[in-house]
Length: 292
Image (cartoon, rainbow, N blue to C red; front, side):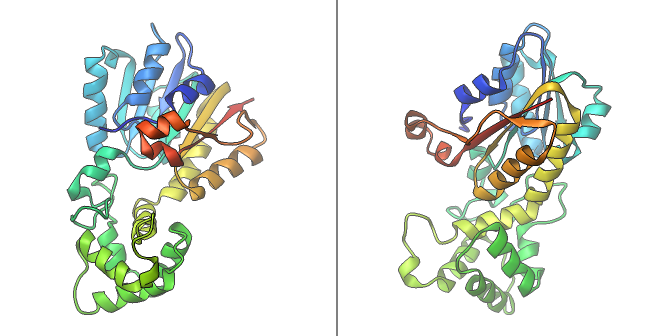
């Protein structure tokens, strides 16, 4: 089961109040959306966006069972299109916007999605089946310079050149289609003394391919710009990120956009108590800014 992170800290900083309207642009299973709707009763509304059709269905069922669905409009789309979505849904007077980046436990545990290097599945890694790009296409058809760029920039992978070289070598004789197949290639490219460490040798490559498949960093930049455009004066934008690439984009955007004032000088991290109960929270960083 996916457990939303930093809920106490988020509710304190996002500060949803009675009858206010919010956008949850990474709806997931609806955990944060439920907390927001409970605090904005009786008339506050929520626009929930997620690119993943399975997440929309799960969140819809969860909100219905909680008796909150009448105040929520759920849309399957990319949050990069938030400005158009809000206009189409006639969703105005927006007091707060939440981004909870990264992928959910349910996405990770679904073998056919291909997100996990610990399970054998197809090299997919898409958040949405409408996305024409898959990790398999990237691995098998991108040029060596582009593969090296993806691994180096998106994965911050130390052995980007070696891994890209082994991928090129392997795909010359057979198609790379499975996650376990890719893991074996990565392990054969990394020096043996770096195998078996605390961080699995495939972690950064899988991160890089997921980011490239879903165009995550570019979509985040577009999403932040859209959030700034649709938020009302006094509205708050909250972002929970899970790796340094995302956090740097958020920090830069909050610090360089003249009409935004960060209210978190440093990113808020999960407490030791939360990390013990939900290890995923260890890497979570929360930043919040208010629009003037």
